[in-house]
Length: 274
Length: 163
Image (cartoon, rainbow over all chains, first blue to last red; front, side, top):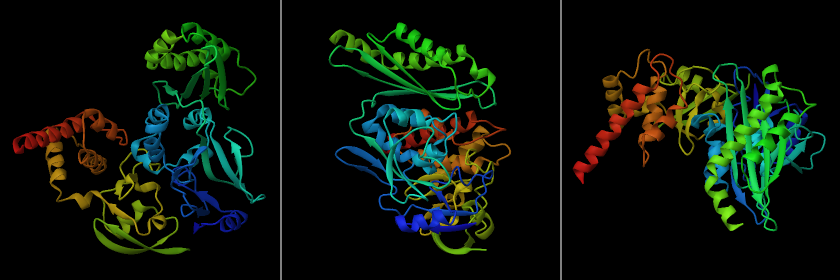
């Protein structure tokens, strides 16, 4: 294997042209099942391992680890910190990077639902286009590919999704049947309506998005979310078991119930105010 | 083959090694430094058998780290804590509680527990959380938790006695 370092866009561009793959934490790239020939290390890029606060955004360097994000999130997005605690193991989180976890996506992505709800954007550079561009984090699209590099991520400070709950649903057997769901909510000042958004991965090959408006947030909301999940069609299911509409509805219900349970204090007080 | 010269502080001693670019820290420790505490388990960072401590980062899986990226890093392995009093207490507690059978994963678990018991405050939940990083297929984690709590209680008792 060849290993080089790049600390400028020109060096990185040159490496991409020569077919190098970018290494961040290395947990995905260096596993025994993924031998690579050429890697370029971008940890020496300016602010590569920093979370920098700007007036309009929080910007994450490309080698910020999950542990670092978790420590930061405790003060800014507690729901994200709680969710990160359920990703991988503490030792892996010390090494795995946020960008790597998102860029090497899987249908059962766990970090994607949370970061998507926060409105995360990615600064992408490609072999063909050396000018870095910000793009909204999506599961599919021009963000991905062997000739793409993620130079930074940013979370808008104006994000309305800072309140979120993450749920990991697993079957008690070793077949990798995992579903991850994140749900966030915001309340309209004008009419007290609560807008709930969910991203669920592990059911379809592309994470599905659900959106429900409710006042108040209660079991009827859960049923509406379940009905929406029940009706989701047209995407490629991961397997027969998870493809069933009943299972999708079950998952939506579980995720929303967790929201209702963990945030019951908030909803009771908001109802009193209303 | 492309090789690189890398300087590492391992267990407090400066070492310079020449490694191919694809050599993992685990292999460097075992084949070039005769440090066998970190062991190959799964090769994907999930089992915790290869855990070492990197200064400024914390516990990391050495099977997923390229040695070439660690130039200037300070690494502590299980052997580096041989004479550490807390590690000795943990080893004693492991023997008392029967927390090791085949022993393959034990150095990694001891390193994690040493790391967590060196912090403050610590309770049983924190101990259990630290063991999430380790797979033990013959003993399980109940005995490890009991051993860690025993050490914690002894530490607390000593602190009360000193106060």
